Length: 261
Image (cartoon, rainbow, N blue to C red; front, top):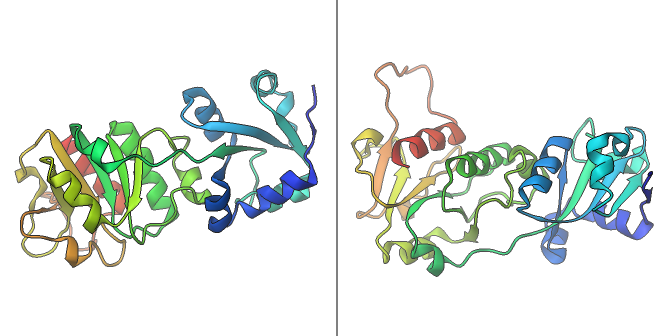
């Protein structure tokens, strides 16, 4: 059965959600693309309000989607306005309207054990999305988004998570205020930093409570976070080349998570 056309009111809302201030006000965001939307629907990590289909691409006719719209509200959008809502050059035919999950409480997370990934002013949406996806794959306890980090629900971030958005608890906040809450509960903080004074990652002791911090793509981690009691670790390889300045933030985090988790 073909879904009804989208209402003008809803279409206006979808356009507005491309801006952070409206996402924050409405506590809603968009996920685009068949694979990402299917993943979110399957893992049940997010509250999906409605599905929207590009009329030209006719995704709703496919068996996997026709079954979905029997259980989930859905609407059709003409191709031109669908492209205006989409954040890609070639819209992928289906968009999900989702409610933002609530933030976790630092005090509750601090009482757990495991690994947490944190970012300090990571600004590239693709990098951040890949970091979240990687953290979810490794089963980290939480993701802490420090000041200066791009919005977790930016459309490009969400697309880069490949459906991992909402699968792990998250905190937005100032790391200088959040980290002490965890350290008071026995958490080790490891700053990925290749500068002077850092030690090879493989020399760090594994602990039951570790927070790994990834810094800004250009400037690294804020010096104010590098307290004496915190570990600074660098990733080294016997075959590393001086022709490459540094690793990509998401790649570095993947190596650290593998080594310490």
